Length: 80
Image (cartoon, rainbow, N blue to C red):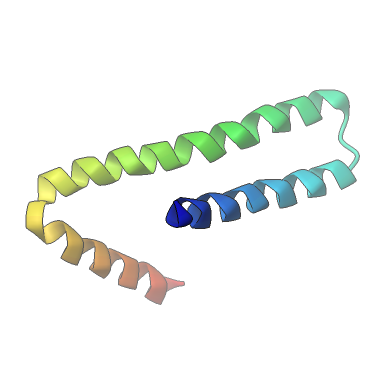
């Protein structure tokens, strides 16, 4: 449960920060509604897509999945 909170809390705070910035921008009502629908949609959809893709890749790659994931993560870290 603590891991789940550790993942969900930063996502929620990220959405809060973007929402506050959009609120301060003084958007018209139509744009506020649009942002209010898009933000949660992506906050819910993309993690679910990641879990599904990770499960599929894990099954396809088998035992090498962990080593490949570490290499990809290290590569992304080096690029950043």
